[in-house]
Image (tube, rainbow, N blue to C red; front, side, top):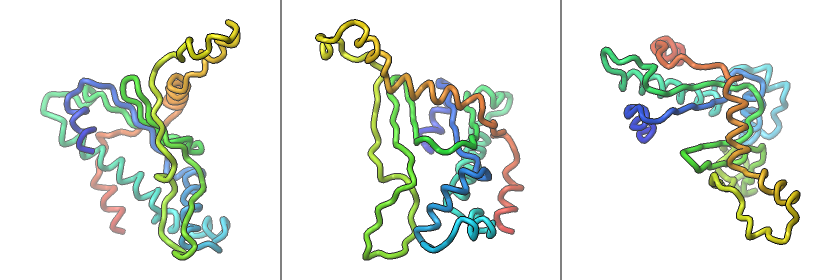
Length: 199
């Protein structure tokens, strides 16, 4: 969070963050998958009939914590007489199935594929675990494929390859999802949220 705070405070970069809405069905589906690591016999119907299981899940807690930290950061950075809108930071929430962790900075994008798989050593039995962090993180650069590598291809085939640019595809994915996301008011009060956590 430190580096992000520095970027926001400097007001030199437009930052947009997309988080899953922890109340949506897809978030519950993902947190259910993680609950199976500790309770392998738990059914989807049982999970859905006990709302506290999702409310206490890592996904729900960590997403809420991320939003509260962002709000506190905005409050700490904001200065009297300087509109917080000039911080150039926006946050939104989506309700579709998670696609990937994606971080774009300038002409590079880092991607970790999301999935429902987890490899846990048999000798450990039931264990607390979260999805993710086990897939390789891949970096894609904003570059056109090297034509010399495909010198023998006819022009129409080269055009097909030229359009297969992972950076551009991932950038386009984000630009499609962003307008559909519900935006979060980072200047909202966090006291009510903290009080509800202690209930």
